[in-house]
Image 1 (tube, rainbow, N blue to C red):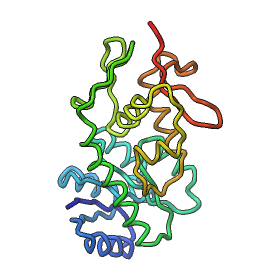
Image 2 (image 1 turned 60 degrees about the vertical axis):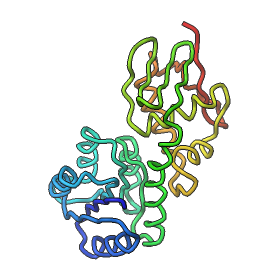
Image 3 (image 1 turned 90 degrees about the vertical axis):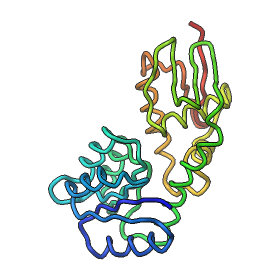
Image 4 (image 1 turned 180 degrees about the vertical axis):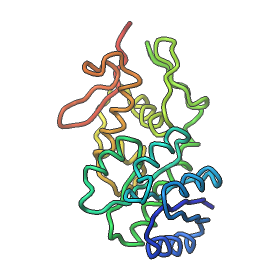
Length: 229
């Protein structure tokens, strides 16, 4: 049973989302603004946060930034159609998915199931250790080492890098990465792959203007290479 926190300042949306998610078997907690949402997040430690961008006081992007300082919990943003830039910023800050208002409750529950399924799927491939010339990826310890230096990655970044490493040297399309990392039922757009690849590069590459480990194959996707020292 999943624990889900919904942060939104519109009571009808809170009530609608709570009704559908509770009917699906989840424990749902509600908050009507950013500060209340952060307090509820720290109290309940949910498996997923559904977060509206437009909140009174502390807006959703500020809340997301604070959550990311404390946790890798899955976060789904709720946005309006006019909030495209906020959606892009949200993905950059670390949101896992977004849904545009007005939305179908059935689509919401489908996306929630797809997000939560990621965590259940991670356990099956945790034991493998992948060792290259300059990289070591330890699934059990959830650690990445580059030239003997520990590289700190979020849970999602780790899974994305490990997926590329499993198919090292092969080009993987954004669609393939979405299927293997986000899940077959992911409904978001494929730019989320580019955003998280950028995050990994910032941490893993010595020079992000000339990436050596994660290489872009134009018009196709990405591949992991392991250059010699």
